[in-house]
Amino acid sequence: MKKYIIGSAVCLALAGAFASCSSDDDLDPVSIFQPEPDVLDPTSPTYKFDKWVKKNYLDEYNMTFTYRMKSLATDPDYNLVPASLDKSMQLAVLTKYLWYDVYDQITGSTDFLRQYGPKMLHIIGSSAVNPSTGTEILGLAEGGLKVSLFVVNDLDPENAELLNAKYFKTMHHEFSHILHQTKTYPKSFDEINAANYEPNTWQDRLGGTTCSLGFTSPYASGQAREDFAETCANYIVRTPDEWELTLWLADRGWVEVDDSFITYALSDVWPGAFRDLDKTGIDDAVMQKYGFCYYYYRNQSDKDQNRKTYFGQFVEREEVYYLTNLQLTVDATGSCSTPDFEYVNDYFYYIAGGGQKFKKVADFEAWVKTNFTDKGIEIFPAAASEKTEDGGDGRDGRAIILEKVSIARQWFASAWGIDMDALRALVQERQSDIDINELLKQIDDIDKVPDAE
Image (cartoon, rainbow, N blue to C red; front, side, top):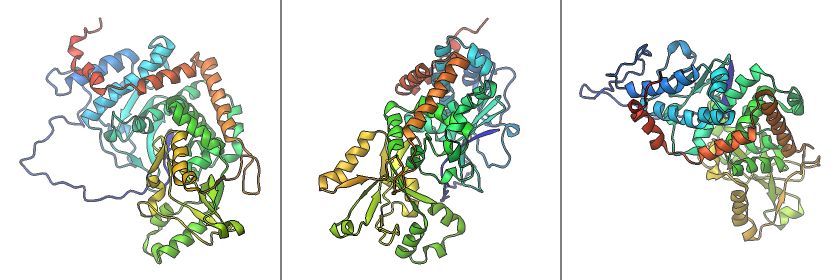
């Protein structure tokens, strides 16, 4: 079973979101537990949708689009909620438009996905959170036969970033697994970054520093097969601006500061903070290392004593990079003797991202100009990509990522006869021009479409 998981230790806060139900409340006549009908019932409230799904998935690709949650198809270890009907319809038409139709056009027919696509796409309304690690599962691919997608009730057809982050990157990721289980990718891919995989602690890695190691996401740095699927998926769905930002971050030098400095600083500004938090809170609030790509001197005294104030910590969230507000002043011995930073959303600053999100390099450069250059503050890049005394690891992250993409591109062409760049271009074109109402109109008009002979 392949699990596509995302996120560093996600902290879940449950607040009074409970509502009572009186005898006067109207109940939805559509049961989300209703079994899949063997014969379509024209009197059913879901008749048009069921007919559209049958025609566009079962008849076309010999696969089922399962939106009524099946207990036998879900993991009992997770507390799951079914997908709502309106979100199910939205995801059904979007999946056809952004995934199935794309492959059909690139390969020239429905035969490719009919033969190699999953036999069941099972959608679930809620997320699946691993209570032991706090990681959130967005998708599962099981034996090349079934793909499960989660958090469907959060779907927003107007938000392209979330569509990719929660659903379509996951689809391309899981489909890459299905394809490489059929025809394996070159094993030279596994050797490119073999020394930098962290299967147990990838979720503690930051987006920027992970890019510099040659990975397109923290999850990619867990193991080689996930790296391959992430490389394919991120290259396909990220816009040119988003992809260039990934490569720009991979080009940066980074200084990593150990989290003991953060623990000290938090204890200093919040006396007793760690005593009052439970162990989970501490683990979630304090990461292992903090990576920065720039520094400056706060004053002449700092410059004379080589006390550098580091900034430029990036985390990846939902297909965009967030710059946190964290800054650390580190003295010449490497000690964080004068912490100087502010927090956003309490100690969960790294989840909230400090309120600054970037989808292109120009966004960050404009932020730096406003906050530093225009104020006369001289800034310096952190460790360069070559090995340096400041901690450079000697790896060219940009070149590594591009080498991986090159291997994936050749594999798509030689193993499947698919032009990966043409596939990417069509995905980019379609995801920039989504009219959800027009897509949903297909369901309303399904009775106007002649049945297949």
